[in-house]
Amino acid sequence: MSRISFVLLLSCLLSLTASRPALPPTPAVSQEATRTLRRHVLAEAAWALQQAPVTVTSSTSPRSAGGPHDFFSEGDYWWPDPKDPGGPYVQRDGLTNPDNFTAHRLAMIRFSRVVGALASAYKITGDEKYVRHALQHLRAWFLEPATLMNPSLLYAQAIKGRFTGRGIGIIDTIQLMEVAQGVLVMQGAKSFFPNDLAGIKNWFAQYLTWLTTHPYGQDEMNAPNNHGTCWVMQVASFARLTGNQELLRFCRERYQTVLLPTQMAANGSFPQELKRTKPYGYSLFNLDAMTMICQILSDKTQNLWTYETADGRSIRRGIEYLYPFIADKKTWPLPPDVMYWNDWPVAQPALVLGAAQFGNAAWLHTWQGLNHDPQVPEVVRNLPVRNPLIWLE
Image (cartoon, rainbow, N blue to C red; front, side, top):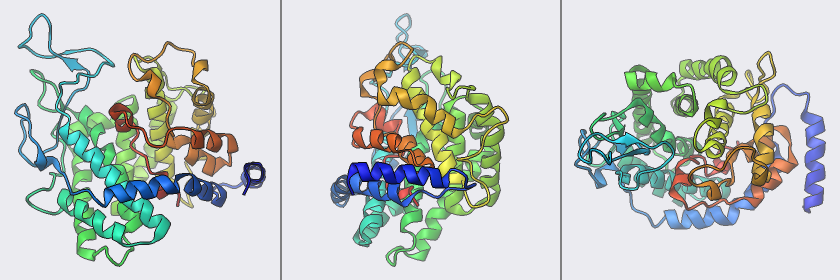
């Protein structure tokens, strides 16, 4: 199909579907996304097939208050105090301390990359070799006593001299979302044995209990910015994997009654993110997270993609607000971010998933032309959805 024909097809789809209460991803967008990513997906999967599992037990930090099976990370923007080098760290918002312990975070990102690539390749080809290899990593992280990660996050984003862990660290496990989604994509394969599936779902069920009952989880749920968004996004993702209908209902209600009306301004912007030292990157991040909430939680009876508050705030308005600044960053009205300004935008999932729902050819075309394989660690960390094919159902 030529690009001109494709644009015309999408325009027709937009006019035909505008009045429907619930829109499935259009076949045209799904097919075009597969065409765009096929070569990259298969190359990533070839790399993933060569990787052995690396879990939290592969590295330790003397600054961690936890054990070998506990995930540990340190607050990104906290530094030694020049006035008291041996004392508690001090904050420098937006500026990442390169000497912090990041091995567990990098291992989890690698895990997400491996499973996301293998699940994407399986979805394209149906070849169960990808499922068999993914299971080696899934077992290591969730099932094998010697290497598994504890289903809790007591020691994430610690701050030397201040906290051994914080609720804010829960954002680190957004990297498990594509792991959970990859399991959903692959669980019907003959190679995915029932006992493995049950064990993996049990791990996520335990983690959900911790996320929703521990004070850290409750603090993060109530965060008024992207952290609160990402709590809902994670809980929704893991609840869908485990079939927890009560939590799915709770997350839908929280998006409608808390996230959308309190975080989005009437024009579609996110004021809490705009006041940060990296407003552009944080705005992209929060938009992607809200988009994923709509993708995960929408079903035949409740479509968050089309939900609007009484004054018209909606995910569509959010995408429409940021899209011009993604298409042409030079038009961004605020000062550049203090770090990583030159590294954004990349292939933001809000564009391709939004295009699938609303038949917007411009969003899809812009997404196709952006970087689908970012290498900057901070960008990768803030782009938990890097395999959109497994989300286009």
